[in-house]
Structure formats: structure tokens, C-alpha cells
Amino acid sequence: MPGAIATTDYHTAGEPFRIVHGDAPVPAGATVAERRVSAIANDDGADSVRALLCQEPRGHADMYGGFIVPPNPVGDGETPAHFGVLFWHKDGFSTACGHGTIALGVWATDTGLVESDPDGVTEVRIDVPSGHVSAFVERAEGRLVRATFRNVPSHVIARGVEVSTSRGIARADLSFSGAIYASVRAADVGLAVSPEHYPELIAIGREVKWALNDAPEAQHDADPRLSGVYGTILWEELGGSGSGVNGAGVSGVSTATGPRQRNVTVFADGEVDRSPCGSGTGARVALLADDGTLGADQIFEHRSIVDTVFEARWEATNREGVVVPHVAGTAYRTGEHRFYLDFDDALGAGFVLR
Image (cartoon, rainbow, N blue to C red):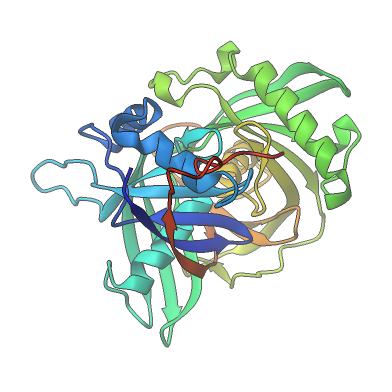
């Protein structure tokens, strides 16, 4: 473990993202997906560093961040990513993170790692464990307007999967958008997506996740490393038309207003996303596009439990039932840190208090 670990911290729509750059561990592997496997095994101390930065007193039970690592190798004529990232949280390393991708795009252009157009859109290409994604960072007179996360191809897996819970039978819709999510209407389990229901939402989110995690529907058909339910999305309709909070479109695309929903995403083992969840929004987009609720010319307004907003649309592919979600939001720097571990500190490695 390095003597000091430098980080730059951002928040995306209220959700933290701690970026470890120059001091980041680089686990073995030819690709970011392979490095994630090595990180889980604590190669090069990667998991120890994750725990140090996530856990109290340096972090908290809902902390999120990532290690900057080299991008995947590419063939002749292919355009490489600017960098790769290993996403992490208090329970380990995730395969996808939309709010983190938005933060990384803003960070890369803020720092000059990727040269930024002060009056236009700059693409930041990033390799993540689930594939290749981009953040399109839009600025006007140098100031951030929005950053749009273009996710991996996404699709519906199953609908109406029954789950027995402490609040009765829940029916979950499973979809993939870099990770597998289970969507459950909050009212169907007697809840609303509001801070006063926070403990109950966490409890039911964990129940649904672990009930479905090993189910046949939660097994990725092409890559077992992407299997398992990453998070439960508890959602509710808001009605009305979208407000255009982040502008008239996503990445400058002019589109019509569409559905409005609020959600809370309970991911990993009981962590709560303060943002509307970037890859979770992609999972919702896959479901809404599939049943016709979200048209190709519409914007989906997605609000979080703290009422922050992402706006999303979808891009068609040449594969039936598969779309590419685009999710727009903003991210801002909150601080820069140098963290230390004193080996005489009995609490040095940290702890989690939920």
C-alpha cells in the first residue's frame, strides 16, 4: 500500500465519486475486466486500498470511487480509450457506474487530461469492466453545461419475475445496462420513494437483490463476470411532462419530453445511490424503450430520492431489443485529498457502521 494516496473527489447529482489517479493500484490483466478480477483477489493490494478509502473514518457506508488504470489494448486502426477505470464501493468492485463515468468525463476535461472544447462537446473515452463507454462533456465559455454518459448496449432480460418478500410478493423487471438491475414499483411493496421511507427502501432493496442474485434470469448469457443482480431500483411515476432540467436535449440532441419517474437504487449490499443512478437509469431506459413508454424522440426525466435529475434517451442498434442509453447530468469537484495509513492506528484500515 502506498504511503500516501491522492484523490480528487466529485459528486454527480449528489452521489460521491472519489478518483484515485497517480497513486492508484494497477492489478494484473490485459483488459479492465481482467484487472477487476485481480482487484477482487486483492492483487497489488487493490482491495485493501479500496477498503481504506471507502470505510470510515475516510469514507462511509455509501462511498463510491474508482482507480484510474490503463485502457484496453486495441487493434490497428481502432481508437483507444483515454483511460480505464476500476469502479469500487464498500462491498467490492462493480462492473459499471454511470454517475462515475459522468464525473470522470468532467474530471478529465477539468484537469486537461483530455483537451476540452470550451464552447462545444468533448468526448472522453473510457474502458470499464462491462465494455467501452464515453462521456460527452459540453461547455459554454468554459463552464460546464452537462455531461452525457453513453452506456454499453442494453436490453430487457425478464419481466414480472415474482419475488417473495417480507412485504408480500414483488414483481421485478430485470434489465442489463452494464450491470443487471431489478426494477420494482415502490407502491407494489407499500412504499414511496421518499427520505422518510429510507430504511424500509434499503431493506426491501436488499431482499429483492439477494432473492434474485443467483436466479437463472440474473445470469449474463455472454460473460459470467457480469452475472448477478447489482441493484434494486424502486420507482414511481411522477406524471406530467419532462422539465428539461439539463437543457433541451441530451448531448445537444433536440427531443420531445417523455415520461417522468423517481427512483431509489439500492445497490451492492444495502448502499443507496443519492443520484438517479447512471447505469440504473440505462436499465430503466431499456425497459421503457422495450414497451414503447419512451419513444426514440423523447427525453426521460429521472429523479432521485433527493430530487436530483438525470435526463436520458436511447439510440437504436442493429440488434432487436437492444438499445444504447444516453444519460445526462452534471458533476462538480468537492475536494482534493491525501490519505495516509498509520500502522500504529488500531482503526487505520477503517470500519463500516450502517
